[in-house]
Length: 204
Image (cartoon, rainbow, N blue to C red):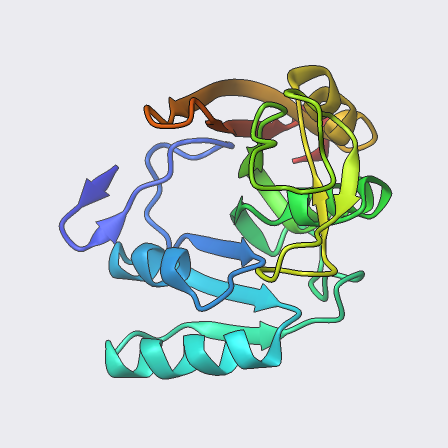
């Protein structure tokens, strides 16, 4: 909720208390989501394993006159204290990791986040364009062979796998939807899951 030029947070014990909202953009890339949040007055930090992406994010933010804390991290350890951020977002990142690592990082995201987490994950029927997948639906992970992102991991999700992703964390899924599109020329499908989690009350 906005009030003047400030953001109002009405959860967790205050009566519409005014205070700056802090957010983490996990796997921020060149910082598009970070910049959008910053434009809404959210104090934003973006982390990514790519030094090049972070350098580009810093350049773009500077050109837009936005004060955003962009940092390179090691890909395994999220370098923040307990409840540093009010919420965290992650778009198309956890599905580009081995599942065990993604599951561990979700627990770390829960540790550094006070309440909410939003993420986007590739769907199980988005298999076209991957030469080493023959099935129309696939819920395992592969090493990408194509020139774009060659050698990286792509992990495909259905809802039971999404539930397993959060099982070891203190997050509970409170909302989700799957969006699919069909190519009218070749009939191929592209789909993504959009998930919102909330931290269990006893951990806030």
